[in-house]
Image (tube, rainbow, N blue to C red; front, side):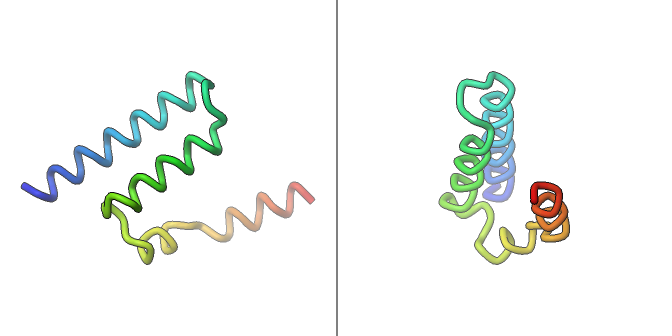
Length: 67
């Protein structure tokens, strides 16, 4: 039951974050960081999993295009 509650809560955070991004009431970067912080602070994703979820190749590509 505990895992199901985490899944429901994570889905709710995702949908709320997505709705805030679509509504453009808050800048999308801030909304994404708040959503990620909520997942980390509630313990749904631990810091190790969060770091492994980052695709550094994509970040490198974006930085390269911005330079």
